[in-house]
Amino acid sequence: EDKVVQSPLSLVVHEGDTVTLNCSYEVTNFRSLLWYKQEKKAPTFLFMLTSSGIEKKSGRLSSILDKKELFSILNITATQTGDSAVYLCAVEAYNTDKLIFGTGTRLQVFP
Amino acid sequence: EADIYQTPRYLVIGTGKKITLECSQTMGHDKMYWYQQDPGMELHLIHYSYGVNSTEKGDLSSESTVSRIRTEHFPLTLESARPSHTSQYLCASSAGTSVLYNEQFFGPGTRLTVL
Image 1: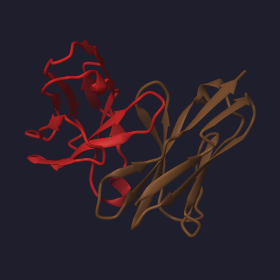
Image 2: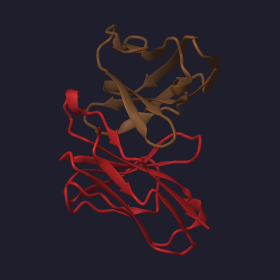
Image 3: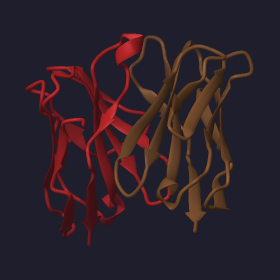
Image 4: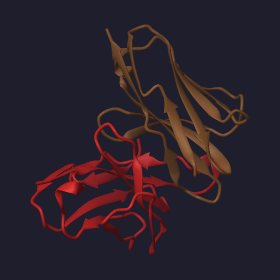
């Protein structure tokens, strides 16, 4: 059965800290891995990763995929209170348009 | 900014009522999805559609039904709401199966409470 596992489930840090969120997956016919940020309501898209070893970067956020070891990490440097959210990892397989979501990592950043 | 809309944003109703949650997108996307998410829990796919007149059940069993008569519109209906249907319902859409276009855009969600 396809599954996506995220860790940690919850993380509390102070502003300025760097955090690393993990996502491992077991999916038949993997096509892409996506990261979303969910604050109060709907998830918003962060990154889509399809190739191993190529870092995607957006400001203080970056992400990389390892298709051999079947995981991805999301890094946030110099965290701010506005980074507080649930970060969702989702995986898509070929021949389907469904996303398999992990349970998310709840990040809380305190001043 | 993704153009996908859901109404109502909040709905509180009594048991036994029939309700329809609206979802529409102006991006011309063929693929649309409904997810159910309880507070602090993961997203569960309950319905999806590959295009007009196409609907499929998702991974989580749901008593709701959907229709796709127009590309831009994907309403979800509960014939007789029960307290167990209390949840947040998120609608999403995506352009297609190309690697470049499989990002899903989410609507703002409808928080449903059934008393």
